[in-house]
Image (cartoon, rainbow, N blue to C red; front, side, top):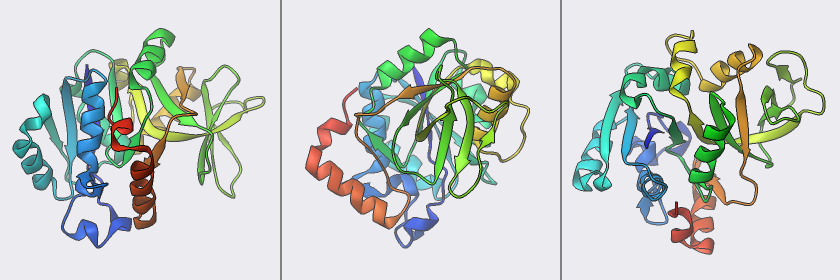
Length: 247
């Protein structure tokens, strides 16, 4: 199984750490967060990685060389300019092959069951299946009662629906982890830099199934800011590193 790690972000809110490091190499509990993500993916059955690079990408390549790529096959997709999540995924299409694959943000750690996520994705026939949960967030996704993506809602703004408003739409926050079918690439009409969620919402509005996978009950943290980095470190210390490395 293949997985793509989105590691091209500049990490502006993590300055001054990211003045000398790419965001993916910022340490959590003593280890670069990229290492934690890779070890979890490997434990979940991933054998090949695609990693997109932009800000200080050479340091990520050097890190993986020193670690022997953790025993995995690794390909790099270099971006200049930065293509955001959707553009980055589309650029890497040729590297991802013709089987369903995982996509994992490099700035997220969790105890989400990735094998169960992929099994749910394959069983549903969805183009993409997003790990989502009930948690506070300024950006919420809206799902209809059948679990299909129906819209999104930003804090202080009215909902934006993919098509018609969903009755009793459920607000859930995205974990930054998804399972994706390669069939999506032929349907991506977006070009250049664009967020993947824009493509998902457009496809959902056209009747394509973009599904949610409830990850409530698992642990989750992201390191988007210095404050969140500290919180992630405390969570790992409290729960133990091994919990975040299991498949």
